[in-house]
Image (cartoon, rainbow, N blue to C red; front, side, top):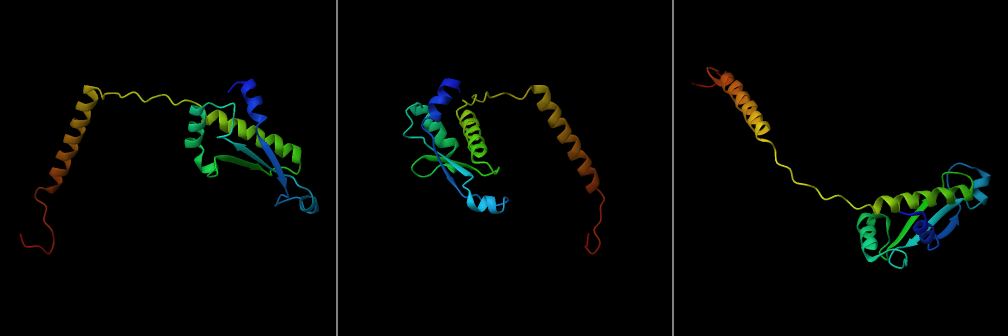
Length: 142
């Protein structure tokens, strides 16, 4: 994703903050350091329909039914640091999800490899067959 497109998409992002759990003691109990990022994929003006569909498929587990992508960060005791972290995660997630997958090319197993495999199978079968001949089982009438 280009730098220009990333900056345009970041204009559509909404942030909210809340009190963070975990470490921090009194500081964490009285300051809103957790940052949540919301990105409304269907309403985005800077993504094509194809890109929106790709995001919907790849990030469906992170989206609400309405198509709003939600990420959060409460790693540090600083709201601004958490905002920077969640923004970086968002951009990396978008970049990864918008990559086009290369189509898989069908390949044929080479004849020598097939023949070698069959030869190994045949040898293994012969080994097993050799184990069965002349074998008697206790308690059975032969």
